[in-house]
Length: 375
Ligand SMILES: Nc1nc2c(ncn2[C@@H]2O[C@H](COP(=O)(O)OP(=O)(O)OP(=O)(O)O)[C@@H](O)[C@H]2O)c(=O)[nH]1
Image 1 (tube, rainbow, N blue to C red):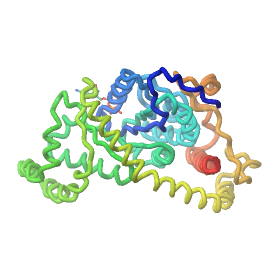
Image 2: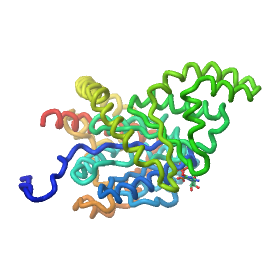
Image 3: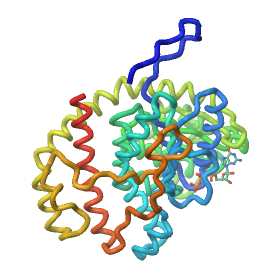
Image 4: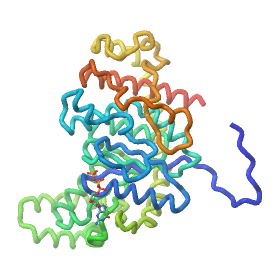
């Protein structure tokens, strides 16, 4: 579309840049949702409203205006009922179903990029649902291969005053850093209850942490002593910010760190993702037909459109307009009023549903990457 010429008398407006995705992870109760809510308000206050995505299917209430809410697409209680799952299985399966349509979310984010400088993503309460699942990986990689993406690890400072608990939390943070391979910021939340300076001191001064550990006599502390040596390197390059999501303090400092992490993404991660994208597209186009044949054999007549599946350049199942957005300027997509569970084929088992769904996602991704690289 043609761009309107800029009014020479108006304030110079910064060129639209790709939005920075802030992927908010953290243990249950660490304050992720409150943090996203606070961040949303803060950015609105700066005249830079973020694009907000809720990926927690089990949350009762989303206290911020979400542009995309997984609950509009998949009702996790319905998923539990249909597949005979418990709450955790229901949440995992809901996220899996959603991940199969994440290409649509990517399109919405792309459309939003002239309006929003930041995309905030709230994740399920149970951290492992996202960090140790295929869907979490798919979503993270989809985001990180297109936009600067930063992991924000929210931790409850008030529950980390014990050195062994603190160490466990840091080990978890470290494992996520190595798993996502993305720029990383630790947000020490709830600083209205206790200032995070004790934790910063433990991270900067090995002796202080050892002193704290000396109060502990369990065998765990011996392990922690050894582990703290290992973590020293992790700490040395770690970005840490103390925040109170309830009071809204620490957010200026957070955005200083976000800017630095974005630069790190552009410098170190983007070239790697570009390379991976090319390798992935190449490898997948070679194996696609073979994989589809095998999948069709496994799945029998379920879910795949037999005509479309043989054409490696077309997607087996075209994405429906399933992902509903809220409060955006997008026209047609928003008008859809599909049922929340339209994407669930109730006749098939959970496993048989997921497999073709992921297959479709991968296939659509390849087509999408290919189209992009041809642009
Ligand atoms: N004092 C204090 N409490 C907070 C802060 N941030 C969150 N909380 C409280 O911590 C509890 C958990 O907050 P949530 O935002 O629901 O945490 P969550 O990580 O999204 O939890 P899940 O719903 O399990 O994903 C709530 O009672 C919040 O009010 C904070 O900065 N200070």
